[in-house]
Length: 348
Image (cartoon, rainbow, N blue to C red; front, side, top):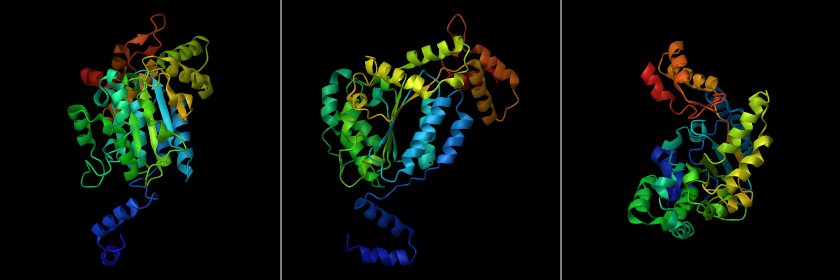
C-alpha cells in the first residue's frame, strides 16, 4: 500500500479520474469508513412512498421512520432488518425497489443491492442441512470477482444452481459486506424459503459478530413474504365491519399479531426462526389488503405514466374487472394492483 501511494498522489495532483478510483478502492480495502456509492435521499424516499404507494399508511410511516432513524445513527449497534408481510400486489416489492433507488439511485442495477429468490437460490427444501453448512463456511474472498472488484452475482447463481456449490452462499453475503458495509440484501418470496435456512444469517444480524474489514452493522436486510396475510386481512376486515377508517389502524395493532403468525406458520421461511426468537427483526411491516379505490389509483398512476391520465373509462373498467373478496362484501382486491398493467393494456 505504502509503495504505491507516491504514484497515486502524483496522478491525483494531475487530476486523473482513474487514479481517484484506484485510490478509493485501495483505501476502502483497508478501511470500514467507505460508503460505496451510497447516496441516501430520505426526503425523496418519503415523498415517493407518499405519492406512489396506495392504501399503505402503516408501511409508508414505518419504512420512512425506521430508515431515517437508522441512517441518522453514524454507528448503529446492529443492521436494519425489515420484514414486509401482506398479500400479493399490495406494494411489498415496490417499496423494496424504492428503498434501493433512494439509497443508491439505481435499485437492482446497483452492485450493492442484492436480491435473493428462494426458488432460484434454494430450490430443494430437503437440502437445508447442506445449505446451512454452506452458509457458515466463507470461501469467496478472492473468487468470482468482477472488474469492479465486487462479487459477481450471476456467476455465483450459476454455480449455486448448476454446480452445487451451495457452501459458498453465506461467504457471498460476507464478501459483499466486505466490499460494501452499506450493502442492501432483499430476500423475496420468504414463504418459499425452507424453514430454518435463514437462521444461518443470525450472526450478521446481531450486535456481536465481526466481519473482517467491514462494519457489517451498517447493512440493511429486507424480508418479503405473504406469510401473515390472513392475520392482516382478518384485522382489516374486522375494522371495516366495525365502521372504523383503515387509517385508524396502528402499528401496535398488527406488530405482535404478524410476528406470531409468521413464527408459527409452517409455510413461512421464519417458522420457529431464531431470528424472530432473538428479536433481530427491527420491524414487521404489514401491508394491508387494497380496496377498489386503491386499485383505481394504481390504474390512474400507470395511465399517467403512459400519457393517458384522463382515461376515466379505463380506470372504471379495470377497477370493475378485478376480483374482490369476501363474497359477502367484495371489499378487497384478491390480487391487489398486481394485474393492473395487463388489464390496462387490454382496455386501453
